[in-house]
Image (cartoon, rainbow, N blue to C red; front, side, top):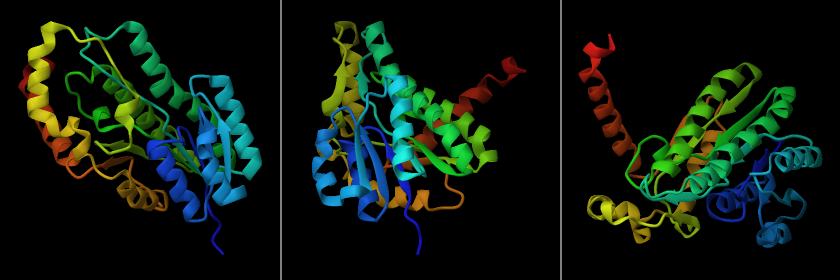
Length: 272
């Protein structure tokens, strides 16, 4: 009989974290589900019993992350899938965003992910296996006005995870960066918005005119559609480093990267 996997998921009480926690339990896996308010997982605990361990965790507390990771590992005896999902959005032009707001966004989105990774690595190395899944974003690949700070946190996660994948492959540890586009996860309700400056009103209007569909929650995809590709990726012997999710995101990324290569070639004479 095939043994189920053991997951460790941050931000498990809502959005992708909640959906993936439930999907893992539904297929017979076990989950260490962490959240700032684990009582939001009470229904899953009631339904799945000992298969889920719901624990309180603020990922900005590195010591707590280390303690909770160890507790989850000892409870189930191993960790196979580690999903660093906790995070929130910070929206606003660069000049509009206060330094402290930017710092707080990095504390959760980037340093929270780093703390989880550093806490699990000794355990996964000792096992000789494991799959680390940092949840980034489409804006970890491309950049737009009003998303500079949030995008910077996710670009940082991507750079971190890319290096990580090269460092830990020797230990049998896999890395997949999940990069979703717009999904109806309720993410916009947990987004912090900077106080707008009139100097950027015209650009803001252009952005809404050009990318209104990406900013309109009524057009967002069903987040449950991410379950099948994620489960397929974690069951692969050689999963992709990048898992871009969303029906229109990959063509946009490809076009932007094509334009970026052309821009690099335009400066080739200066580069050499």
